[in-house]
Structures are given as structure tokens and as C-alpha cells.
Length: 336
Image: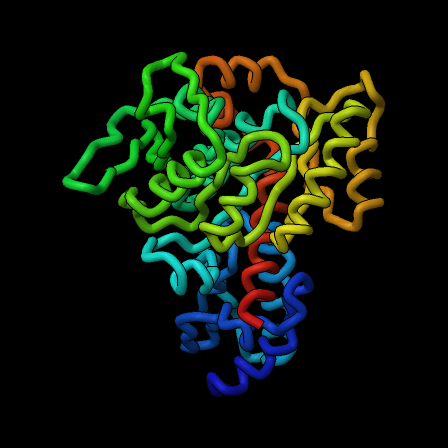
């Protein structure tokens, strides 16, 4: 039983989302064969990959079927988020992917969903940062309160960090609380450019870009300044929010930003179930899941305390797993 024979068997296992086998994708690492035991690391593309159990089971079954002399198959699972190569080509920042979180309408909880995604990704082991691009209404400092920073180092800015280690930058740190910024488009563009290029971003798997609602100057500037790996759209089940969801989808398509999918926030029985999923289907984009109208999330949105996520099974895990999978598919598509 040679390593080549093992790789040959494992090449029959295919990632259904990427449409390629796991050997070709480079998922199989550190293969060892000794005394009837095969061991290797299965390096997947996103923390908390929803296909983890399926792929490991397929690998184990394939190896045990092909090699009767094998008594044990030890598969260690790890994750490494793939690099969106365009980011390194255009910007000197060590960020692997940039995910824009937008909404056609204000008040749908977009910033809360951004903070929730940051916490969920972090709890799954990813390195996460949040850039608050909602210049007129910067709420991220309240949702992700820092324990240190931001700090100036010469002409550079070291971003803030939360207690959990999430990296955060916002114009809200640079102005007095409650101060309104009455700026025209060029000033917005300049500020956003500074937040991107003058900040010492550390190595990040995901940089979440919390956009303002609507389809205006900041969305246009963000698409010009940053290679956006993809956009997530947040909507409530309210019929008016669904109308603006359609406008948001159209805007990102016009800006040639890949649409990763739609997240329904404040889901409940008032407007019935399935409305946002049906809208997403009609628009031809993935529906990534629902986040319920919840007292705990509402409290976190005021206090910045997301410790309820540590109690028991991680809630909304299916949503963040779906986001991670879509990012993985998109980075592979961008790499050709």
C-alpha cells in the first residue's frame, strides 16, 4: 500500500460544492501509513464546514473498502480560508477575503447581523475583522466594544480589539459620540479609503464590511476601493424590506460584486414563513438562513454582550456555515 495508491483512492472523494476531488483541491495533508493505519489531515476551506462529517465519512469508507489490511483510518480536520488573490494584487493588507454586508433598507438589523457573524466566525476559529463603513451611522463601536485601541502609530492606525480578539475599525472611534457627519460623496470616499489603507490590519480570514443601507456613494466607493469577495444582503420578512432587497441585489449586480446570498433577520410569524427565501429564489441567489427575532440578540445589540452564544450548542451555526461555504466557492471561482 503506497502513498500513491492512497491518493488515488482519495481522489474519488469529491467536494460537491466545488465540484473537484479533495486531492486535486489540496485538502489532503500530512499523509502517513504505518502498521495498518492511515492518518492524514483533511484541510477544509472554512471553519465549521458543513460538509466535514460527509467528507470524512466518505474518505474513511473509501479507504477501508480499497485496503482490507487497514485496521484504522485517522482523519484530523482543520480549516484554512483561501485567499482572494485580487486583494493582494491591489492592496498591501494581509486580508484573505472581504465580505460586504448590505441591505436595501435601514432598520433591518444589518449591523447586528455583521457583529453576530463576526462572533460566530471567531468562535469557529477564524481570524475576523470588522470595518464599519456606515460613515453617517457608525454603530459597530457599540455592537463590538473594544478593550483596547484604536491607537495612532505615526501615520498609521492600529485598529481596536474586542475582548474576544475581533479586530474593529470605525469612524465612530474618531469623532465624539453623537456627532453628525454632514459630508458629500468625495469626503465619504476619502474617509473610507483612509479606513482601508491607513489601518494596520493584521492577518484576517474574513474582513466584514458593514455598509450603510441603500445603494449610494459608500457602496460605489467600496466596490472601487476594495476587491469585494462577495456581498451578503440582510432583509426582514416585511414586504417593504423585500422590495428594497430587490433593489440591493440589482445594485450589487450593476457594480459586478458577487452575491453570496441573503440572510433573513428578525424572522417570526408576523409576516409568515418563507417570504425572504422565496424572494431570493426569484432573484436567483442563495438563501443562507434565518435569524429569529430574539430577546437575546436585541439585548446584545444594545449592550455589545454576545456571551449568550457560548451557552450550549452554537445557535445560527447553519447561517455562518452557509456563508463560509459560499465564500469558499467564490474564492475558487475567482481563482479560475
